[in-house]
Image 1 (cartoon, rainbow, N blue to C red):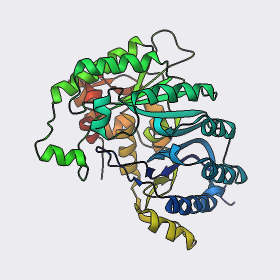
Image 2: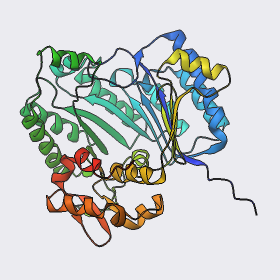
Image 3: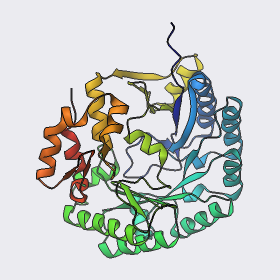
Length: 393
């Protein structure tokens, strides 16, 4: 008897690598906009969509970057028309990342009409000096105006991206940023500590002694974030992500994922499969990880020749894959229900990783119960170190 065909993949990521200018802290693959290259990229992206469409039935879609909102109406219509023709629209959650400087009502309405129902606005800060330090092209006024524009276009699920531990940022300025952000009434808040990635201008400034790191201040800012978000009715469901919950009581249990959580990212943290399209995008499909070339002309050239633009491919052993899934899942406040981990990986978390969970619990970083393991609030602050214990070769 023949095996049934595999179920189509339910998550789709599309990388738009263009920005108005490169931010000083950014280590993602992105580049300054170029009209001819953007048009060539659009053609290649739609062709890559055609290559994988038969194995896709998206429940979540995420356009990231770069700055997807930089694309003009004609370019968006080309992408959206292709997706509609291929039966790739209608996802339960469809996110597009936006920059406040590139949001317009016409563009927002076009996306909303196509089925996009969640937008992520890269605010980072409301402080003019810090925006300049980060190399952002928008002003604080643009951030407020863009948020109002998206509401006017009919979006009722908006995320704000913020950054803390920015050089020159004080705890008081951070408090004011959080107050302004939550007063806007967003459904989701993502907030990330500035990291000094090699090959970025910010890293060069650190090496030259022009800026310095302050771990104690960063910790204080993170604690302020957690407390302020909770007071504003936003539940932390992942280390740096907070969301509102329609159906929950005033204080959502840590084991519950709130209704406005980003389902696309939850799929990552739960070890789910996904297709990633566009330059530098990573796919993880049925245990095989592939990565596209981080070079837009080369990406386009490969696609134009009728083949996927894949630079590398890796297939982990089942145990290594399970360990990686365990590590990623610890980022979530809900941790790992043992039954769910068994369903996803085929492995027993208490069996292979029982000693690691016991060690983390003894040092106050973990909480082990009969049917679940999760990190404590202290453990979540050091989640990367905790996660390393679960990796297997």
